[in-house]
Length: 229
Image (cartoon, rainbow, N blue to C red; front, side):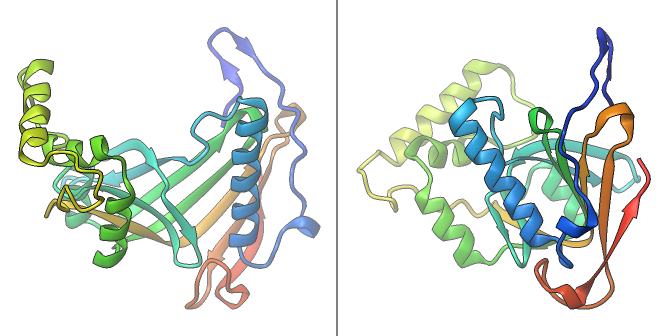
């Protein structure tokens, strides 16, 4: 992160992170930082959408693309998100499973980066999550051909209304079927980095690099080191 904004400069006053406070595998620290961000949003309101994660992919010509979605899972298998798999990100991940992602909490002077490969989420996990979504969100998953052109807002609203008529709200989580194109991905990380802002741009950057098989919480799978700011 850079503090050199167009309108001025901000000196970061974060607590930083030192090796003594960093686990041998990244998951415990990432989970603790995420929990702290969620708690801070609830108490102070200055961490909007604490689970927002930026997802970077590349297309068939090697051009990068990035967008922000909500992280729906974080566990030993890696961070996970749901999406329309026929969208631009889905098409790109079919061409190349290389993926990078970042969680950023500016008010806390903290960020987390993941680099690795995308793996499709299990169908049962996707189906269970889809059933838990609000009715309107389930309808939108059918109405929107994500990333495709649309004539105007009215056309989008018409598609939504048509789906509402086809699948009325009965209060049953199964009243809207799971779209064939709706799924999700895990990021199987090869590297995880945490960034903690400090004064005078002397930030802390600790990185875990994969050295063997295992999940985000397995110390045998990772080697930790420090990166200069």
